[in-house]
Amino acid sequence: MWVRTTRLAGAACIAALPFFSSSDLSAAPIFFDDREAFMAAAGALAGFEGFEAANIGPGGSATGSESWDSESDDSVFSPGGIVEGIRFSAFPGEQIAVAGGFSPNSTGVAIGPEDVASDLSINLFTEINAFGFDLFNLGESEQVFRIPIRDSFDEFVTEIEVTAGPLGSFFGVIDESLLLREFTIEGVNQDLAAELIDNVVFGIANPTAVPEPGTLALFGAGLLGFVAARRKRVGTPR
Image (cartoon, rainbow, N blue to C red):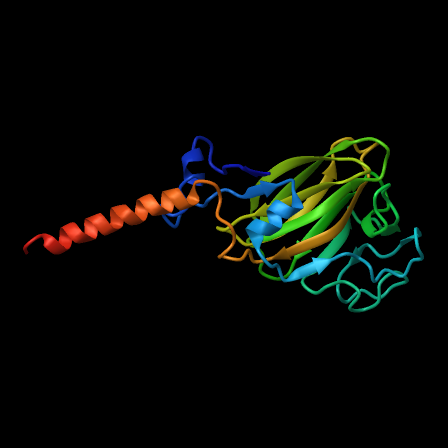
């Protein structure tokens, strides 16, 4: 499933006309709650991080630095243990933790802030317009998480709320008009929401990906109009 939002109030029509918008009108991001649909739309993405290089035993957990990236060197990750181009941080200034076997249906490894009251911040240092991950709540209940998004100019893009429990939910976004840079995961109820993420994918969406519903029809109508106008101009004497 995909969900489209608009950045400008009352401008929903902009989102439906990606081929005809002027350059100063940006299409809205498309959100996905299904990984398969997201990957079909995004195509092959260059970045993936599943945290499997973490130095923990099966079902174990550990606490490391305030942030992890490809240059991290602590008791949990060695240099190169995190894929290049991305950094994961606990905010404000807390340690970040890694957990294995964290979900009833998972034997994988996930990360999140050690302190339940902290947020998880994700910064990208490579060009991306597509980003997705599995989101879990470490507690027993489903909780609402708020995810504000900022672009490569550090401008606020939009914000979405995602519900996730111990079985996990998928969050994905594609924005063909902007390069995305920062995502923050904030528990709405700080006492019960303890976010963990796994299977992070990111990169530039493949331009040959499956089009959105109605896009081909809109493009076809626009192309026919262009051809008709072209023929009319050619047949009109100067």
